[in-house]
Amino acid sequence: MSYFTKYAPMTTDDLVFHDPKISDLVRGFAEGTFDHHLMMHGPAGSGKTSAAQMILKSRLGEDIESYCFHGKEISEEKIEKLEGLRNYQRSICDRAYFLIDEIDECTKVMRQHLRAFINTNPKVTFICTTNHLSQLQRDDHPFVDRFDTIALLVPSLEDWLPRLMFITAAEGAPISADILRGALAHHATSARTLLREVEKFVAELRPDLVSASNSKGGVKVPTTFKPRLTITPSTAGGRCVP
Image 1 (cartoon, rainbow, N blue to C red):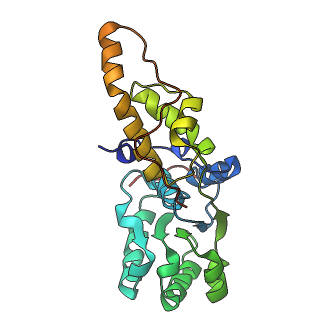
Image 2: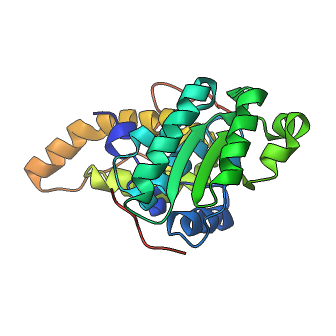
Image 3: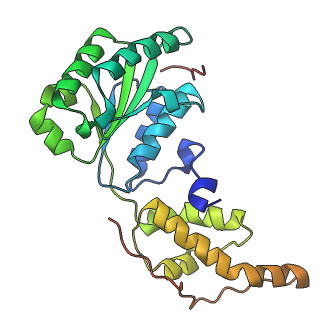
């Protein structure tokens, strides 16, 4: 199992952001402090989808697949499906929640249908993501105007270090921040790429870890360690459980 899967975020505290204020805002939505429609925007690798999914999980529980959609698949039939899902959720708790990833790939006509759905369903919250907020604002300002917007940037290696140190410690290979900085060469990367590189790093230490365990000695990680593969940059309410 890859680290990207094994260490997928379980709570909002596991998410990595470029700004602590963003973390506080996401936590507020996850905990129900805010129930506004939310649109998270930013470049690929900034954590938009992970944050949106975590908000939905916090509100609905683990089984969120039925309530997640991609912008390009929104159709009149899908919006009719939202009606049924809304009724099901509302039979269990006070609000209904839906996630639409890459809402910019939804046609303007379908966004107009969604806007009508929003206008007639005040107890429904939509959480959307997009890489192209400025384009959406130009093309469909009335739709965007119904959302709170949160701008995300790709987290830096410094932002990631606490999470990476937790992961390496959980793998039995506690590594200092300085060594991780040197090993990862200060590249800001996507979560998937960064975790893959850390997984390789820990794998290279495995023989030393086994040897140290057998001899009851300590594992010495060379401060001059260089990964075999270089990294290339990229880029208020209670919880309702169905």
